Image (tube, rainbow, N blue to C red; front, side, top):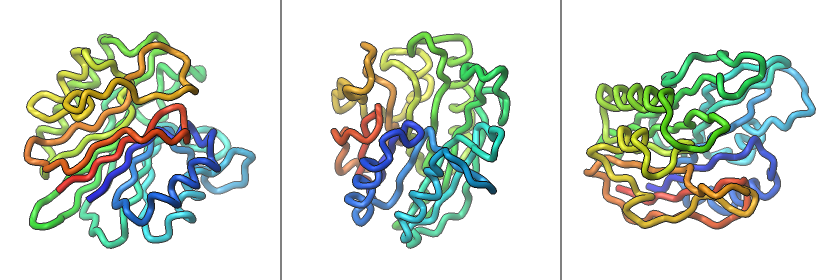
Length: 243
């Protein structure tokens, strides 16, 4: 199976993103997106990125989980698009920092952080795919008390949910943090194992080039793992081919 994970940057490079998705759709089974915008129930000048991608990917089933339902029917959160040939047994979300609609005074540091999960059988195994966008503090990607707590809650979720687990997304964590070590304990962190030095591009102007990760259970057979170089966001897309 092939999975692609990307922070879509709220659709700021929408046309480039659409061209990328058209190219990758036929060979991809699962897309996991962070910073997804979903416009609900009314017209808006804000691009409805989720609905536009759903139209672009008619062979996929789309799932959206909001971290914040904003005024005017504009929601931000996580999205998965999974090939309709896969039977999703369960899909949902779980909050690891604050709660849904927790933002205060438009301060993004108070935005609740959820993970999105989907479970399905494949070739005699049960898989659980987890899509995650970690806490942003505005002060780098190092450990904080809130981030460590967030990681502990995420790990608790991993320890109770069944299936062979694959975690992907924009973790907002540097590589050598305790917060990341809590998550990837007894798992394979592919960014580390493949010696990746950056998951960002020229649109990101700061020195710490780590943010995005794919972490898998040790029994996942990794056929291919790459950081794609397409400029479709201020993040680079991660590609995983696995069995």
